[in-house]
Image (tube, rainbow, N blue to C red; front, side, top):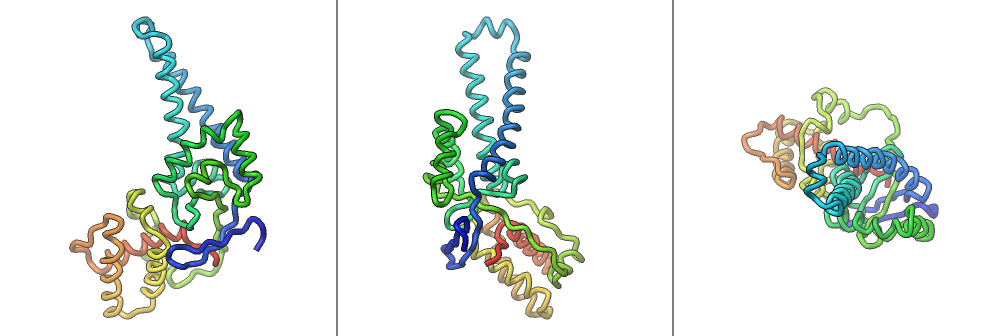
Length: 263
């Protein structure tokens, strides 16, 4: 295992290997994000200047207008990273382009609290200018962590690109059913509550689904649906067996993108 490789034992006793994102890849992602934020900040300033009437400027003290603008800029700059990392599987636009993402040290998706802490401390990592402190810490830390990562218990890793192989029976089945990961919408908070244990259950179920006969398939599908669907806020209700199968397969596709690692 190279210096930039890390082996994680999950709470479910599964061993995962990741390649840590170093200073270069993190800096490249940050440059992309900062370009986006620069345009967003300019747009906010111009919006405030050109939509605020002269009467409004006269009614409010100059200091108050500046304060409002600063708050708006902070909300956009902090919110950009928070929303990307929590709601989009640990990836801002820059991270997605470079192929890296933020995860918890235990291998799980970043939690709400960790996303808040990590990005609040971004202000400190920026000191004294241009992320100087953060750059030094990422360079020196054995796991390439800045202060925000240390406090939040997170790491930044490279995503695995799946190798092109001959389609498996499961992939053919999913294609024939016309399913993809966006077929069903699941809230970010509910989705982030799932972990390695749930993914392994879904993976085992999905591969068995194409091998089992109808009677065994029905029983297994009902059992899996009763365990997993309530966790993501999906009601079993009066769904047919086929609908439950499709729902579980779509959930598998969603989780596969984040949890399918080479062990």
